[in-house]
Amino acid sequence: MNEMIRTLYDMGLGKVMYDIFFALGFVSVLVGLLWFGKRLKLPLWKIGVTVITVYPLVVLWMFVMFWMESGFTTWGGNNIVRIFVYVPLIGLPVAKILRMDTKKTLSLLSFAPLLVHGISHFGCIFFGCCQGYPCSFGVYNPFYQDIRFPTQPIEALAAVAIVAYLFYRAKKRNYEPDGFEYPLMLTIFGSSRFVFEFLRDNEKMFWGISNLAVHAFFMFVVGLIWIFILKSKSKQKSVEAVKP
Image (cartoon, rainbow, N blue to C red):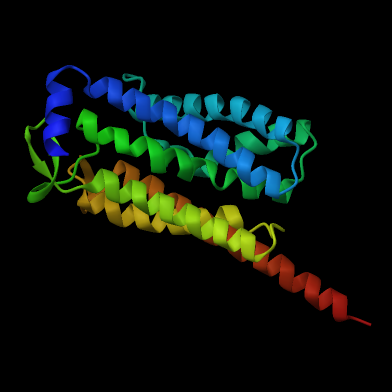
């Protein structure tokens, strides 16, 4: 594996492989959401329109956020951890226009960021970004020309594992969303990514905490608050239901 990474990079194909995996991330979202949306009994054409509309807008917002964080000096920042929290703010208005059920839409959207991350992040191996610290085992980093802790595949596989859990949960509920899918995703992924950030050899802001760790912690907090609100509303409805 490491020899292949070295060879591809020396041939000038590292960025090509990175771009291929980035494109595969979009394909995985389209295919995955069409598959899952069918089980939610959503019209396939509406799912397709949602994906091809929301995905570019989300990517654009990701670039804009990095641009703002850099002090309006650098355009780019291809890391979707920044935008997990904001996907519903972009996706729900589109779904409303298409007259899609809110709970089903949120359930559908909960898979999108994870599918992108779970597939696209493997491309970082070939381009030498998102690397871990130097160690005696792991993935060859073509930029530093040494072996680094394999953060990229670990983070990608963690995202895939969360996808599997959400699919399992949805199937267990007979594909009847309860509104908890997206906040659950935020809390699980946010907490895991916050931990993973300490394994990455990137610039730290304070106490060993990176910029992306702050974004991860933010999505974790948003997810917890969201879950608390949903549970409070559910409890209130239960109380009102038993009132004479």
